[in-house]
Image (cartoon, rainbow, N blue to C red; front, side, top):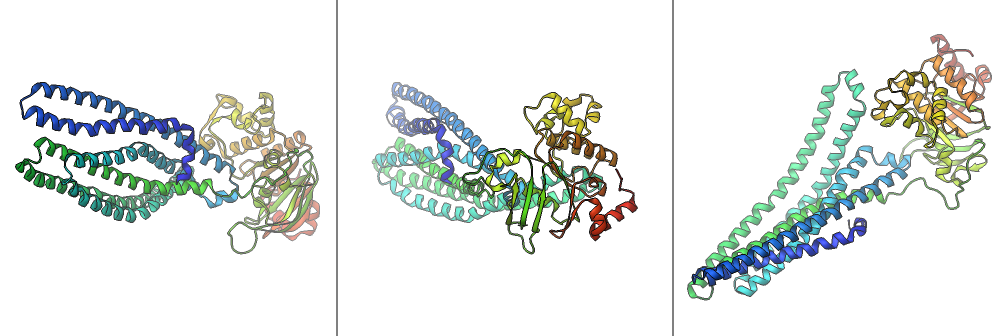
Length: 578
């Protein structure tokens, strides 16, 4: 938990100023009862109005100074804590950007969202409260005790009984409540997961008329979170009545024993009032500490979850001495590559994969669902690392190339075409930030997207909603292809990226890629034979192994799996020659 406080260091001046200003406020609070006692015992009881007015003005002046100190403390602690939270959130976000796919498989998206938002906010709030209450409460408690001893040492014995009782009851409740806070955050993860699923798939929900089902899922997750929150809240609520009982009994004891001393003449009425005030401050400060400890126990859960992200070992990083020399030719060699997902049971996803792709070749990959097609291409830009074997690009082991350099040389269009909020032009330029308007248009034309873009009212300046919700599936795929090819990479991967476009458009895209990217090595994952007829090399994957390799004519003549795919699609009329 304390390891995260290093992010407070740049704002140490404000963090130091807040306690100093709080000291000013506490001094003002501690002097008020003593002055009030003098007003009662020396002014009111003796009819000395001059003294009453004099000390009254002093009290007002001290209150104003204390008010300024309290306001300044609030401002300073807020500035320090908000900046602290901002930097911490950025560090967590930056670490997530470095995560490999394996890391992202471990930390679920909904959990990462909770950690970036709610968990950071919990810890930010406790920092702000600590700069105020964790300074105010101890000073008020110590100062109050000193003043009680100064006024009447016998009355201080009442606190010797009250304070341990408060401490024991608070410790018991906090120890019981701490495990519940961890469950609260986990339940919040689940709610975020349901919300994320619903919002990202809202069109499917409506298409299948499953709003009621989604409401039930959310209600169940929400009720679970409420139940745990209420359980934790009920436990924490026990603290206040217990403390109020102890405080009230302490005041009764002061009045009882103090009244007897007043009757004997060893204590004055003003001093009794001052003692009650100081008792209240001591016990109230202890209550503040208890509530702070409750908040700290909850913040510790959040801090542990944040540290879990910050300290997570990034699965894929640059090896020592990795080269920054750019990829130029785009030749690819798989040498006996085997891959298994971390923590997965059973057989590896890919087994003993070996093949070569020459610069400028088109390599198609076919196979049944789950045969490992997407996994294979994800290994090239090191989105995952191989379990065994190695991959060479331009004759170099990809692990000897800096990640940034490697991924700059490989463009990939994933199965799910993700677009970002912003203009169409910005989305295409996302593949090459300094691309000119001419390059943007050229890439769009190659992806067969230019015509539909120009049919929109704002053309290339058309604003897209989140994930491109205001476009069709085929339009999104074409923009994703344009984004990938705009930087003219040595290696281009199209992972089933034309599944939502018609055969004619797909054919035009392929022809444009041949013209525009003759020197690019292109890997195409496809379900339709028509997409791979002209490929230089076709790989048939079956249960993670290469079950066939060659061009269309060779495989059609010799490979049973390819023959089954070809003839089944021919009967469906989806094979187009040429």
